[in-house]
Length: 151
Image 1: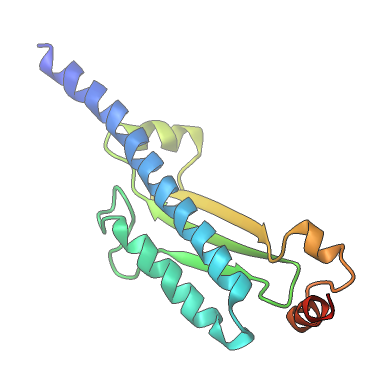
Image 2: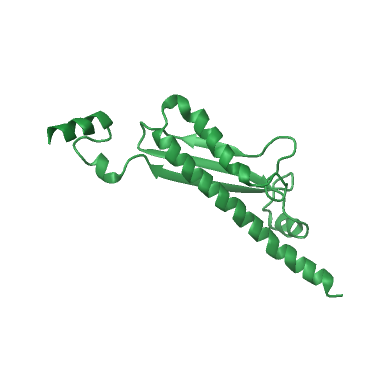
């Protein structure tokens, strides 16, 4: 008689762990993507996107972790590059909640039309430290080399 309640309690504890794992992997991949994007040239943004997708490969292709059936639900958006002041990487995916939780999330309106929960992570970083922008050489690497040679 107690087993159904224990099983329900386990489901309530497992889903937050799954979502936390997804977010941690997504945040790590987005942060590493920002670092790669800050040093990439204009034509290398596709390689940076592929790099982020490879990092996201550690999330199992199970619907409870990441909806993968039909077509992959990973969406990676890159903003900025080496010549900009800031870069950003947005990672979005869909997760199908475990039974019982899908009913509660559906009542709260947190699920989309296909019964999935959308998880979104954004990482944003400056391409150069603030002290570099305030210097006389600015963010131009050749000007820094010239400044070092003069000293």
